[in-house]
Each structure stands twice: as C-alpha cells, then as structure tokens.
Length: 324
Ligand code: CP
Image 1 (cartoon, protein in one colour):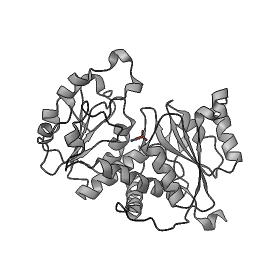
Image 2: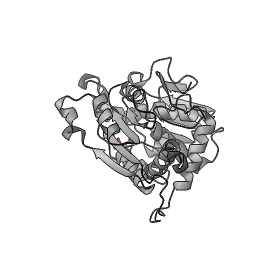
Image 3: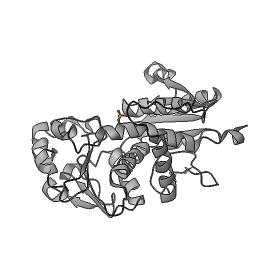
C-alpha cells in the first residue's frame, strides 16, 4: 500500500511523486532517500557547494500550523538545490478572507508552482490537495494533524543510521504522547519498513494509541520496563494543541513518571542515543542535562532535516532533461 486515501504517491515507474506518509513505501525507496540524504549532510561550518539540481523549479511553503525546524529546513533545502522559494504567510493570504485551500492551491499552480510543501492541522486536506493538483505538481507533507510527518520520520531514521549503522538488531523505545503524535507514527512506519526488530512504545494509558495502531510494537506502561537495554530512546512532545485543557497532565507529575532523567537513561544501553523531534518541554518530557548531554542526538536530527528534505525534493522533481 503506497497510497493515502485515493492518492498514489509513486509515479508509474516507481519514482516518488508526492510524499504524504511513509506507510507502505517500499524499503528500497526509503533506503535510497536515506543514502541520498547522507550525501547532502555537511559538517558544522562546512559550506554547501553550489547545486542547480532544482534550477527553474518553484517551491511554495504553505504552513497553517506553527513550525521552526520543518519550515526553515524545507526553505534551506530548496535554496541549496537552486530552487526559487516562496513562503506564503497564511494569516496574510486570501485564506484569511475565506478562500478555500483548493482555490489557494489552484492559484499557486497557475503561478507555476512545482512543489507544494504543506503543514496542516486538519486530517485529509493533504490528500485532497494531492488528488487535485496538476500532473506536474508534487505535494510534500510538512506534518498532517496527528497522522503523519514523513520527512521527520526520514530524518529520525537517518540519525539512527548514522549512529547505529544497522537497523535490524536495534531496540528502539518511543516514549510519551504517542496517541497524538504524527512524529511517532512516521517513525514507526520508517523503523518497521527498515527492519527494526524490537520496537517499543512507552506511555501512560491516556497517551497510548488505539490497539489497532502500532501493530508489532511492544507496549510498556513504565520507563523502568520500556527503556531496559534500549539502543535508541526517542522522546516526544506532549501535543497540547491536540487535547483539551482538562486532559492535559500536570507537568511535574508527568516528569516524575515519564520524564527522561540521567538515572532513567542509565536503564538503556550505555551507548544508547537520545532523540526528540523538538520543540521540547524541558523539565516535563526531558531533563536539560539529558537533552544537552553526551548521548543526545537531538541537534543531529535538526541538521539531518535539511539533508533529508534536499533528498526528498530531488526525488520528486523530474530531471531537467525530462522537464525540457
Ligand atoms: N519537529 C518539528 O516538526 O519541528 P517544527 O514544528 O518546529 O517544524
């Protein structure tokens, strides 16, 4: 299955056209994206060589939810490949006057947009857009409600691959507000497809997903059991915006049971890495000395975001020879 609703993500020749979810994408394609992304990774301070792979291509960022990392890294990725980039300020666009998402998209399409990067709080809007755009336009998810954040899943997989080399023998624990997390869902699909043998989800009952989700992952109700001998500990943000005020846990009580402290991290393997997609709530999900500590791969995740988004943009845009 490589479609979301009625949307086929792959072209007839197997190449990627849209990226709305990692669910059902072939392992080969994920590995190719990770390999390509790795070729775009640069050390801190190293310059990006000029690259015109996306010359003549226009990428529009259309974010209806807040973002720092995803939005900036999509913009940098597109510019580093030579594309023109437009960031549509949704609050200042005609959407604020009631224009529908599809009418906005048709307008951007008429202005020769080639790639639409969309972050959207409402489930199904990305699929609707992808199934209505012209054949030359690609749609990339920058995060859809609690459903999917595919480039985050790829950058998480790239970060694990850099530190641990092979996916199969790993024990990966995803911890926290899994129920409301698009990051957890995309990481789960990536790690399953890439062959991780021991995938765990660790959460209080209110943050556990429905029983028919995360199949094949083992469920744990405590960090003491869930982190034991883990190779990777992936912490999640509490998604306040996706729950009512009444259902929000108290920060101190949550930290007391599910916050990642140095003592709890010691339950995992000595060389375990710590991840968090950010933004993070320090002192609620994770202690600062863990977030900024020697085992943290959190800044690698951010750095890898640009490389992964470059790889995805390069994959969906047809080669210049075909475009001519
Ligand atoms: N991880 C992530 O999606 O961060 P932003 O919300 O800042 O884009």
